[in-house]
Length: 188
Image 1: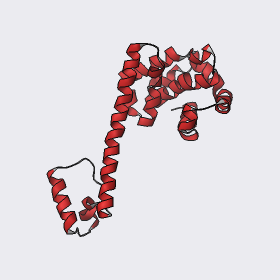
Image 2: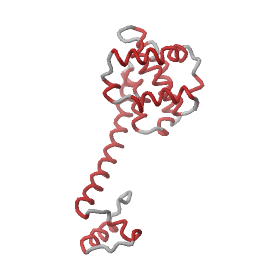
Image 3: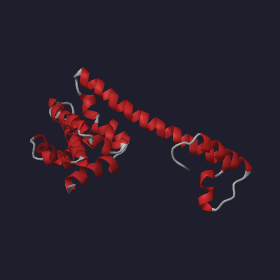
Image 4: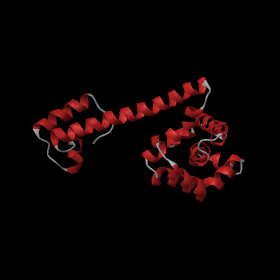
């Protein structure tokens, strides 16, 4: 991946916070305009289309066309001028499975052009995509709660006892026997 793609992704996912993403303001608009205005012009004109060859590059291009556009041109029709191109990149990327190569946090922005579309059918696809993200998060939350409950109950993960040379107590033995009858994904 190229240096400019890395710069876009680093800025968006490491330097900014969710507060910046969804509240923003004139300060952020000015920063995006100064740092990425020329890059946005290039992307809008097709000069960066090669970025779409891999998942992270496509995500960077979507960010420039969908998110940066709104910061650079806030309050004008130009803020939405790149929406069709961003949507096409997102839909083609989804069809190719590129979104699945990204983290859930990155995928939410890969899907954002769907949310920004005024087409009801695309809105339905947006809901499908964001529901899948929620379901992924819900499953992980369930596992996190299960792990936390195990630590609260035992102060450690009994499933690690054998590997770590620890002797299980009676309660842990019962727990491990029960878990063997109904195995869960992952082991603390």
